[in-house]
Image (cartoon, rainbow, N blue to C red; front, side, top):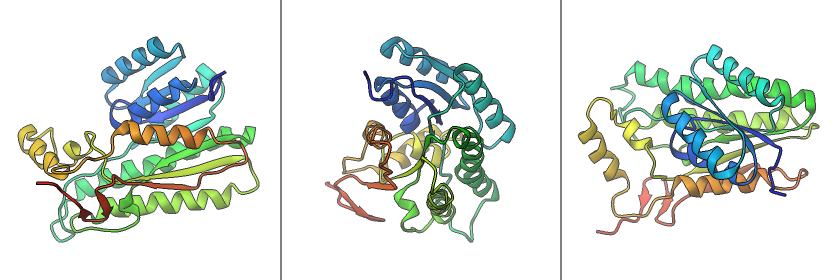
Length: 263
């Protein structure tokens, strides 16, 4: 029997990057899935591949975590299909730009706050309504080492990841006495579409790709699969074990702004 057989996992931001890799890894462990993202056509292809390759059920449903209505429809669709939620992975998140506070763009600020903080809160509240009724479940929040420190041009993104840490730690207090677990994963540099999104690929693909390449230049970053493997490990611990927080960086990254690059 696989470790997560018959468990139901909801994964947000699952059309690419860490969300997609996590959905695939959970499926390999036997979980049935409900995956959500804004890019529904890409999401459908991921879901089809997951079902074909792992022999598990997979529901793909459009999800914009910045819309409470979209979140509610996604969770309702998952419950209609499976009648339970065992794991919620809050993977949807983004960074926008590297502007200083003085140069700040409110549209970028709002997009990061609405996605990384309010979206996570909405999805968590909806999932908890069903987890608390069953006194069972596991919430996994994707934080970042940006929630442990700060850097120039990262004020709002860092603030959102500090918020994820505060939310995760508060949930542990509020859920104490229940059997619901909460884990925060804090990755360092992971090479996904993250930097392409940050530098507005939709506006200038070539410029954004060059800026993204510079982020990972001369070092070996983590991969989405590295983080997915850690998430599966956390959610497959014995029921009495809560892995509160995992900080993971590539060997070349010792801290915020401290990266050894080979020329």
